[in-house]
Length: 614
Ligand code: M6R
Image (tube, rainbow, N blue to C red; front, side):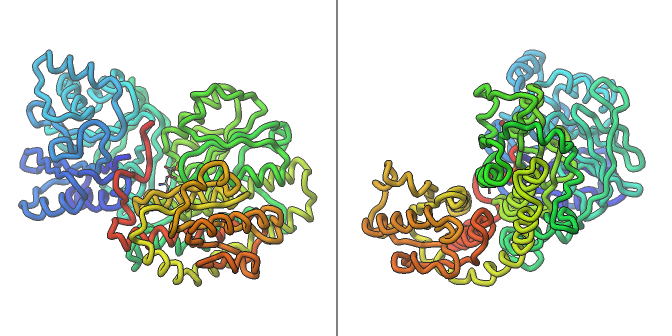
């Protein structure tokens, strides 16, 4: 949830750290701060509540502290309000050690009570501050050893970075259940919550494992476990550069990421379709025999990724004939799901760091089920802990609201469903090749939608004063409706609900009143004839009760025309693939409406990109 940067090298540390924080601000933006180990022997700590701009202004007003070692933090508050005092870094009693943290230290209350009983003075309400004082207690052992000792006493999830005046040339980091990567430079090294923290300086990264401590010096990186034994790590090259994480002329990252969707979809298909239209998912790491033995699939995810999972269910059951359930990761392990060796868990996560999803993976593997991760971030924790992975190739997604990741998750799920159909023989080679051929047309179909969204923008602006918008859908249009509502909630802070259109008459229709905008995702009239007829009736029912109907319908669908106050056209595509085109106008709608209301589109209130707490 929080963004973390560490630097040791030859440059002005404050510049490197603040540049990194700028790229990580999407992880949390309640407050931010830096700690610099000054060449003059002082520890400079500056921090401010609010967005990074506040910290930048504070730093600009002070003389620059000469320092080549430093850490920085951008916060998503858990313990303690987002105030200056609770902002990170936190220091020990003597102001010689500074600590930043992502995660939650679950036993902080008892640690704090003991520290206070021993005479320590704690200044904030955070769980983090105890770590600075615990490090102070064993400072004579050296910072890395002190960190190892402290980590052994902590419960919960944490990434920690610490600097100390006693060792002015080192940053020490530690991680448990929370992300931390190393950036390897020449005569300089970096730490970050993710590679965006240092992508402007190096693309060579080191993946740290669970329960590891890293001692970072300008020319040396030492990694151990919490007991001091040398620990294995994996080096990798980051295949995108700094420009991929910049706005590139767009007003918001979200707009840029919406526009990148045709490419993201194409990249996710790339290299996965063989010469005869059959699929080759080489990196899957599950044998065909294992896949043939699967008798149940449970898709587990959160938020937008969960909506992708709901759509995956239709594809998996329809094409591969395997029973499929979809579950919210935050609920999954608390209801004793029945899992066996023949259950395949498909987890979907953009970040690969969502704690609810990670805990679901661990639970499933403890029950001996196999786990396949659909993930966008190479080397992140979820794919590392899963049996198999299918990476989406959306590139870095910076806006908190997920867009291109969603479309690529859909593509990856279609590929999984078709691959299962291929190995289990539930579809013939020709049938699979036919569907794959339609799938490969999708980048241009998405491009087509992007070319026609201007009226959607206008519509969004005209609805900026509404208090509520409902979304209806049937079949795969139902999860699209849920996704449209989620986007509007998180960006425009409006009451928005998605319903299965058939459920209307069981209650939600009571919400319909004069002028209420209702967005209806109409299914394909050819691919889903029965549900299409039914949704046309639903549109009439709500219109008869005064709703303002906004209908997303395929080109050529004339049946909806008489009942749509506003018609949004999308290209005709096979029914199961419709979410790839129908979601795009809803993304644009939410983005534009939020902008019209003056909201921060990329950093909506109370949210963070990556939710690394349960
Ligand atoms: O990184 P993940 O895909 O695991 O994240 C899951 C959700 O937190 C995420 O999709 C969230 O719902 C988005 N902000 C929605 O736009």
